[in-house]
Image 1: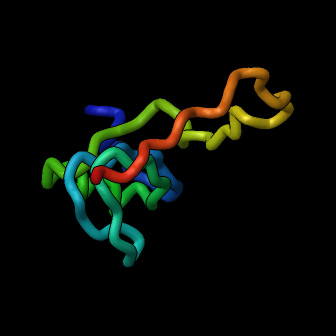
Image 2: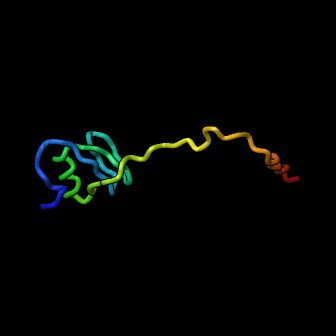
Image 3: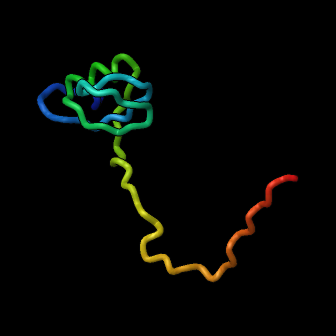
Length: 81
């Protein structure tokens, strides 16, 4: 029996393959969400999701601690005459 079809209560992380409704909310392709196993099994059965092992994307602000640049300012274009 596949790991995605184990019975029991609990939650599962799934990767959404097609835009759909899960947990009574609109979810989009590429989202990783956590749903009850029964709902996950239904979505996997319809081909709208698959079991995910990766964690949710963490947003990172890469500009934190960035020092001001010594580069010259970019030139602005003049209006066409």
